[in-house]
Image (tube, rainbow, N blue to C red; front, side):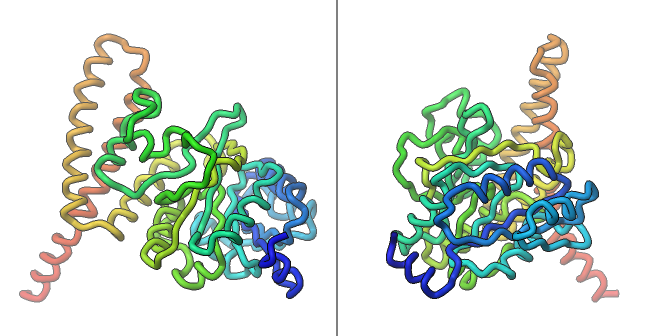
Length: 338
């Protein structure tokens, strides 16, 4: 046992606070909690379940099934970022694990990731490899937004060019090594962070309802000199289809809004303008391709339509974020003149 872990146990400090946000996902959350309870029992831990005003009765059911967990019931759905913040405030562990309700934790993952932080004082946070129920690797990490990563975000580079730099930057292909690797950010499905780091950089920005909040956190860690690592040798199962299930419209809306919020926080207006131009070109090309596919009754037409709709919506939001400050300035100027 690591000396730091031993000292923590001797002092009565928990190794780990595990925070799970639930919203109408009773079966998934139950399965997740069971996997956490059964995994790595040598790690001292607490489980904090934050319920975002579920309407399926899952909060009371889960509380009755697992009386040792700490249940926080929000009166309304405050989102993933704010929900986790409520759990973090109550957490008492040296390390805080943010865990999606649609995950299954395998044996060795908790102990392995905690031990990595024990041994690497420069690491502010770590993530692990996500795999589906079929065993296929999912996107588990990425680098911070750039024009190349934007292209990778648009095109399925992992399928078309599986060895390309674009696919690697977007995390669309699994790492070629099982050794720990420094990355820009890791997936929020399994996000283990030092409590000391949270105290230094602050809680999640609640401007992110869901999605991209982990990118923002890792960015702020980097600004303070902390590193984020992916541990490819450790895997958890990520089932997907959690809070929104098959409802693609709400998910798409939050994804677009959160990514734009991230860009607005950390990138210059000039950068966002060039990104807007790139999106505009993509939408134009998509319109041309969709027209051709429609005439040819191409079988990929529905998928292409969804992709074009997504980027058209993102284009509008990006334009709003670019244009709104100028409109507000003009409106204020007219108000002063009046």
